[in-house]
Length: 120
View 1 (tube, one colour):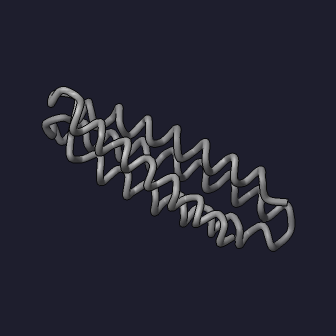
View 2 (cartoon, one colour):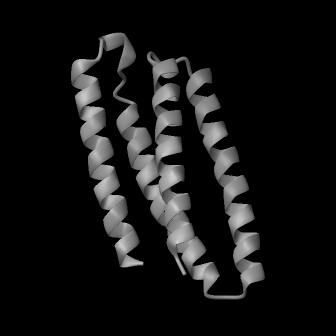
View 3 (tube, one colour):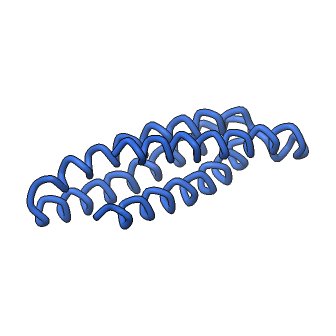
């Protein structure tokens, strides 16, 4: 389990460096400071979800499957709600934030899925 958090930290640093480079090199209408909040949100959410699923995997396989399905549903609904709230608040750069959010979603979901399948 400690290896997961080390890999998560490494991924987080790489994504943070890419986001920093993007914010410094891209045109200003394609950047938003809100992306840092999204990155922090994904780091915390990925760590918490992994802990929850790792804990449920120590029980029966049925518990793990139910936990995985429940957390996936809750996660998708929460992420969608978060994006809708940002868009409805009419914050400047909201559309750029949604693009950054979706990119981070795909990166961290791919990482989380890969790490789950790696566990034996």
